[in-house]
Structures are given as structure tokens and as C-alpha cells.
Length: 255
Image (tube, rainbow, N blue to C red; front, top):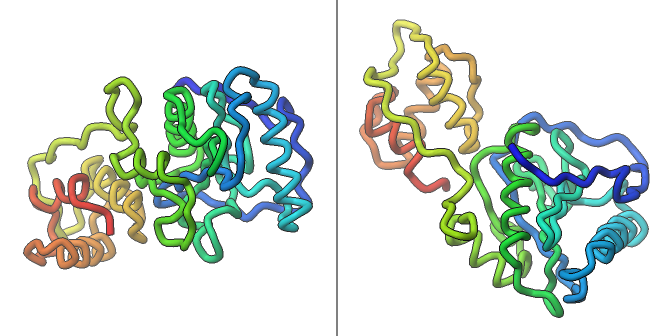
């Protein structure tokens, strides 16, 4: 996976003032904007992007009293992805009680000045999302900060893009892989079933936010998650992953 990563050392990050909380998986990523004025000059001067990222960290540490910058990653209009807290670390920007469910990715646009994300910034956000999936166990959700928290963030332009499914600019589609085909057998218990198809379904349910072991073994725990999911989606409650339940795991809206 290609990503133009700017490490903390490269952008001159301050050292954190404490230990990070640890994350091994999340439901996905929440997208943010600065909420203030961003100079349009940063589009033509990457050094100003670096300075802005430093100022954001200073505000979070000195103004908010946080131990570090609150975001997992920060993205500029040159498709460069700045390492914030990074993968496997709890962010601080999503709101009280919400940080362990999603990583936080900031796009360097604001409520005034530079308000419209260019294509490189959108690509960079998706590069950051894929990086957090690969390195930090981020799930498939891409949400706006305002989803579940009372705020105008990430602004109208970025949020409209999120609501469209966060597509790649230029018709490249969203970052999600195509859903896998139904494996041809119904996953049920008893008896205990095992296999890569079980693991694939369990992983998908974990990505959707369910508390499920991804061990490739379809036992009572997987059956109970299946039953609850079927009930939520209006499917026959059998506890068995048939074709309709399998497809719903990828196609049904996440609630």
C-alpha cells in the first residue's frame, strides 16, 4: 500500500507527556477538519502545512492540556499523511467515550479560508484510512466527527464526501475491497465448524463493531452474534450464516 508518510521526527513533533492508551481494533475512522481558519496559501507551500500541523499539536497540548496531538493522522493538500498518535493508540479528538471506537484523521481544511478539500487531500485521507486498517486494525466505517457527537466537524464539504461513501477522486471507487462471494456452505453450530470462510465472516463482523473472536471457529459465541445480527437486520433468526446473512454482513448499513 502506497502512502506518503511524514513521520513525527520529520515534522518535528513534540514528545508526548504520558503513555498512550492501546488499541488493537476499531470500528473504523472518523474524519475531522480544523474548525478554524486555514490559509489557502498551504496549497502552494508545503512548509506551511508542516507549520500548521505543529501549531495544532501545540494547541492540543498547551491549550487543551492533552498529552499529545489528538489525531491519529493528519493529511494535507499535497497527499502527505502526517503521523499523529498513529495506529494502535487511542486518539483524543472524537469526544469523551468515543475515542476507542474510531481512529481520528484530520484533513487540513477549515471553517473559513481553505474550506474545500482538493483531490490530493481526499486521496490522502483514504491513504491514511488504509494505513490504519493495515497497521492498526481499523474497521470499515468511515464516519464524520459529527456522527455521534454534537459538532459541525468535519465541515459541510468533507462531510458531504463522507456521506457519499468517501469515494476515491477520479472514479476510483471507495477504499473498501469488493465483498467476498458466499462460500457455498452455511456456517452453523453445532457441530463446531472451522475454516477460512468462518474467519472471513468473523473478521467482517468485528469490523462492523461486533464483539466476536476472529479464530476461524464457528461455535456458540459466533452463533449468538449471528442471531443478534439477523434480528437487527430483519432476517430469519437461525443463528446460521446462510447466503442472505453473509451478504448482509457486507451490504447492510451499519447501525
